[in-house]
Image 1 (cartoon, one colour):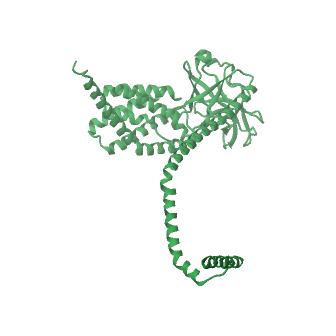
Image 2 (cartoon, chains in turn purple, green; image 1 turned 180 degrees about the horizontal axis):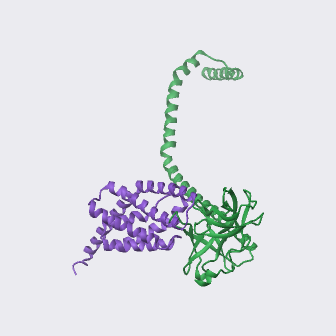
Image 3 (cartoon, helix red, strand yellow; image 1 turned 45 degrees about the vertical axis):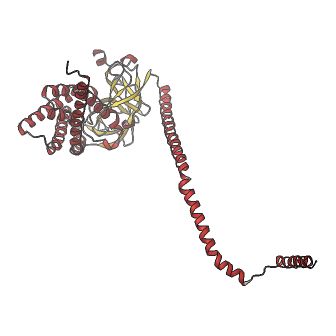
Length: 175
Length: 272
């Protein structure tokens, strides 16, 4: 059930991000919506389960993007690791942390992307556009990231409850 | 006998009075007082009747009107939806006709493809189209639209392909200025524009000049429009000038594209 949920969320976010968002000018500078999902996996799910889907998501995005292969894989992997380390040492899952962590995740992704882009070549236009894009992405992340993580957590819990109830009703667990 | 005579006389007198009165209007004081007393009651009753009529007309009768209104709203909603569909079909028809006209002008064999997705990252400019290996699409094929060059195929699956747009920083097109025939290399910029690199300072290029593909990159057919010059920067030192080119293609609104199937093959394609 959990894996089904992960696959559904992952596909929905990727499809939404590549087909709907580009057509809405309001979301021109919206951040990568898979970041809250990766952070959710890091914060609330076991490492073994989370890392698998972190890599699957990264692989999927790398295949859809025009960037160098492995860019998303790298970003998501390190984001997941950082989140795991943060909750291990800070022992915190409060709302303020959620607000900050998504914005920090978006900043981290952008730093990796910009670093890979400027490695190839840089120009004056690039930095002007970069600052604006990163600023708006972090703003979006700060405003909405928390809700995404809460939503994922809530839906996952509800689905698990429903599924466990279904198993109990059918008596599968008794056998 | 007397009674009969009296009655006849009364009728005659009555007729005479009526005939006299009918020829001319007489107003008597009793009439005014009657109006004075009766009219307020008349008014009250009339208003009451009117009030009841209004209640009936505006509330009870509206029960059926409400139903009719709901039906009409549904009908309008369906009509709007249908109208929207027709408008979309009309626009799509116009766009496809445009594409068809452009296709006729091209001597190359082309394949029409629909854009199904865009790059998830704002840092890279690629699109996904609904034609792939099974349709004869190969890596490295040029992708064009009536407005000009869109990009080239960089990745293919069985039924879909990834197109690197010319505004991507990793893209390069060998091009020349249509008026002066001066060559340059069109590279994508981060802001949706392109930069024509390696254009010699001595060349007389002006803002507004059209830039077309040179065909020398062995990829894009010669003479396809790329964009127009928007800015020229000649620095104090260096042998080249920086020419900014705005693509003719509106990449935000790409919906259908043409893949040129028989373009001149580049070496790297066969190497893949």
